[in-house]
Image (cartoon, rainbow, N blue to C red; front, side):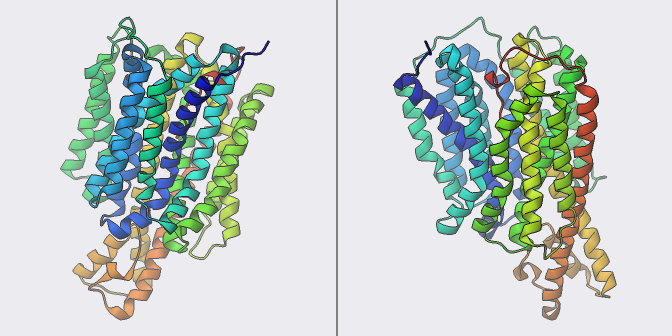
Length: 520
């Protein structure tokens, strides 16, 4: 006789699904809102990217210790704390009128997400009857994919009819409904003092190391590679990470167990998913800016165009997962990476007047590639470790995706400025346009803006402004295409990693979907 789900279990599943949906929709939605936000909140592209990377970087730094803390104090309590912080961060971001306030709100959202995500999955795993666990986890995976798909379109709708601030405001009532459902229907769980203790020093060193290192990378085009501040920042980050590594290896319950790094299939999957998610982040950020800034689509129209990618991810993810069970698991992953390489190659051919058909084709190939590769990369990670190591391995895998996400944002926005400024210099020389030092500074700082408008070129000869705006668009596109070349190379490297690293990977009798992770 099949086990049925009672109303209480359905309510818990619905509440957790709402939280997972919010988490994923926020990720893709904010990418599309950068141009709209820049119209109200003054800052350059270098600073604005922290609205994206600050969110995922704090998630990466806190997700592992948060999961361990939840094992000790109870899932219910950690969900309530995490969602409360997520709501507070959403309110702060929505109300903010300074970029530092918005970034602080996004960081608070990231901390909240890191706190409530691990116990959410654990809660569903514990609440569902054993024979229904795969069903429950599948629901969460589907909701996560739908959130990714709906993010750009919802963002475009809210921006067009209301304001970009409603991307964050909408989290508040939905978050409170989820809290109410948890309070009413999730039983209190007792503390488990036998669970591994959280390591405060190790957690601090990991968070500080990642934060300082990433911030240093972000400042390269601002400070210059030889600047003492930059060197000090990156050195401090690397030092903190080395200290974390040395400290962690002496702990009884290591955050990063050393034998994982000797596990070839696991490390191959970990490195491959890092390259995969880097490209996902690259495409989201750069194509969002390209559609709105260069081609001048509205946020709503850009959101509809992005459906070519995000819907393909949602629809193909279940197929990709099943293919990994039917054939050599390397095949769907490699096929996914090849589609991703083709997608970024097509994007490297874009110009200031590319057709929407070309853009849709490139985004569609990206969605196919990600839909085929994500679930099978998850499955390969779980097949590469012992059953009792899956929770730790999943946490490391999730952390790797968050770091890759942050790198994708930071590196792509930095390179588009570096390459764009070089192209701008070439265009000025080709057209024999000579500017004084002050005018040169104004023009070259404009390439680092989220949106290129005439008001950014105040002080430049009025008769040159229209031409200089076309130069800025051409320079941005030049930087974007170089970013996409790099993405294509990384996707091909991923193929090689998977082909050699997952050779003879053992099959598994456990259900791979029993312990899913969020790719965003």
